[in-house]
Image (tube, rainbow, N blue to C red):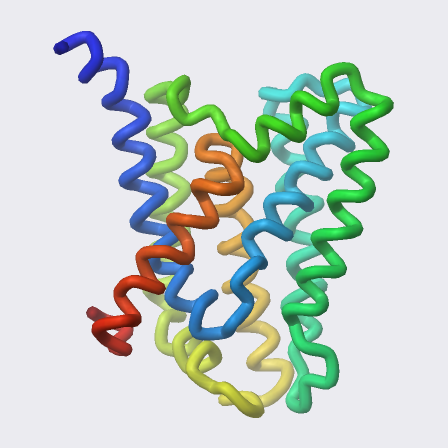
Length: 221
């Protein structure tokens, strides 16, 4: 019994950490109506990793993670900058385009990388049971840094999320806050998906907020 508890202690701890940070982001994602953005970001992150593998980097190396982060930040920055006062194209459509392009390119690259198809499967299932305490500590530090950033800007992020039509600030001021929001969101997704997989990350992002919304619309609650 004790052996099982010790074995599961790291997966349980990292699950709690992910649930906390993803549920917070889920408030914004659900309010904005961009439900599937995490899947699109996860797919772009996987594509960035596969590009790193194509250049000969190992899957767990810091180099391939850096490529994945850079690739994701560039794409999600483009998404943040598509915010307009009069939104002609719904951002959900842009999310769908990003996801389909990312998935298509990943499938093409999978044929050129040894074990590429297995890597695509791992992005879906994750590696939760085999997470190490080093990964838990790294996740804790990263999530704390992201949380501190959001403590400074939370009023602005909420104002943008709550504005259904138009923009709460000038166009470029709104885009600046959006850039900070989406980059931090992308970093969290890139960190969480290899651990929990796309399905678990999606559930932790959407389900807690969806359940809470049945009882209250208060951000604090």
